[in-house]
Amino acid sequence: MSIIPASSRAMSIEYAIRDVVVPATKLEDEGHEIIKLNIGDPIAYPGLGTPKHMIDAYVSALTSGDNGYSPSYGLPALRAAIAKDECSKGWNCTIDDVYVTHGVTEALQILFSAVLTEGDRILAPGPHYPPYMAYPQMVGAVTEEYRLDSENGWKIDIDDIQSRMDDDVRMLVLINPNNPTGAILSPSEVDQILRIVEEYPNCLIIADEIYDGLVYTGEHVSIASRSSNVPVVSMNGVSKVYYAPGWRIGYMALHDPKGYLVDIRDAVERLLRSRLCASTPAQMGYLAGLTGDREWMLEHRAKVLERREIALSRIEEINGLSVKPTGGAFYMFVRIDHPDYQDDKQFVLDLLHQEHVLLVHGSGFSPERGAGHVRIVHLADPDTLNEAFDRINRFLNG
Image (tube, rainbow, N blue to C red):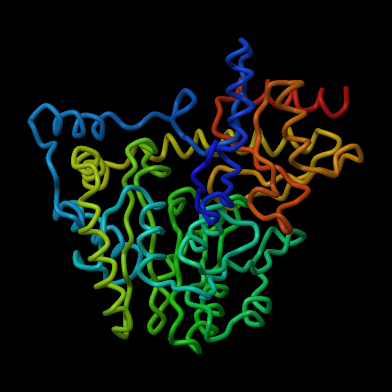
């Protein structure tokens, strides 16, 4: 039988966060209940639901018939609200700088297609969110990792960035707070990085700030707010801080203080028009979140912080695991110190099959810099978290 060949670029893509779900689903089909601490879905567990006024706005759009195509760049009212929110972070964002997308992942796909060509390089932190490796290769570009210091709270090695920069580097990715490590950038670190990139006029910065409202140590600093020369494309959306991941609404906001992005802006707009629009009702729901009262966020954040403390204390008690306290987001990037497990993926699979707890192998975030670690999502309710850590301890120590 003749098999039609698939694209080699597509066949090389891996997405560890979802790939580990395949064996977990098989176990569920056999009747096992799995504790899933693998994906950053805030509403998968009790107590962290999408706020009612956002849901009401979404439903109202459906029932009133506001369910048709919307403008390709996003609803004007939503773009204006996003621009106002970005201005509150310290930079002059206008409605024309904002483009609404199907989540941050589509924003990345659009931007990579608009900027990158065969042989271009993109620098991303190692470890990092997997699409930063997967998507550039679809246009023939190459992602190269710069070092995060695992012995110093996963801080960026700025000298390593400096050593890797040249005219082939078209993008530098900053994930702040970082996924999977939870590390955050200080203003001085941001300023040092901006000074480096300023020397390379063909390079822009991607500022992935989807977790900016979940910072526990210090304050989050907007990358765009620190830049007076370097173009910065800020990425954000409704999934994490607004607790609506399934709505798939994100955006990119272009900070272009020197007018370097004229052609890229044109390319982005052409690509956005070609794919029509993001979900209209979901945009209405996000608009309600941005313009409505945000006091509910304090309660949600307190619950996430409580669960972070549980995770930190439980990991500290387990012989064979260690972790640095996180600065933001809702992940722990945990080092495996147990002598029986040198292979982090095997650790994840064995834990899944023996104790029915699902984590993500660290090498899925970077084969080199993430190896020997696992990512744990600490969003589950306290009882579920404690049960998961009881099982992990039993798995490692009997």
